[in-house]
Image (cartoon, rainbow, N blue to C red; front, side, top):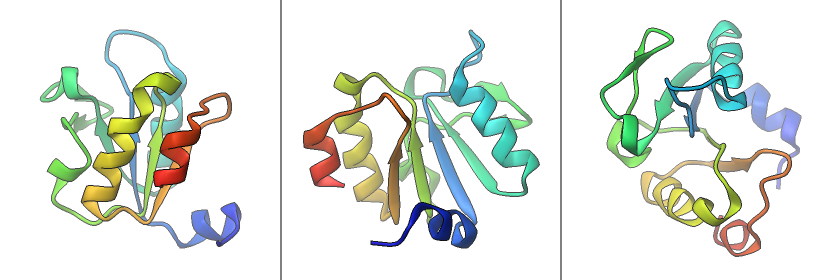
Length: 111
């Protein structure tokens, strides 16, 4: 397995799962940071699909993007992670990244 910094250096496209237009959230801050850093960022939230945020349209799933994604960065409660890991796998994403404090061993094993 590659080290995290190598993955970040090589990555071009990142899907951030768990962004929301309704609140200030870490997912939103990270998405904005990644956009400012020059990554091609896709915003994902099934319940807010079609909404606009950070100059982008929120998508319902990673698989629905229709483009290859290097990293899927998940900002969801641990119990909500497994379907997003399955979505990332179905999309062909290279890496699934769960943020600090988000632990789901079953989902991590699938990734």
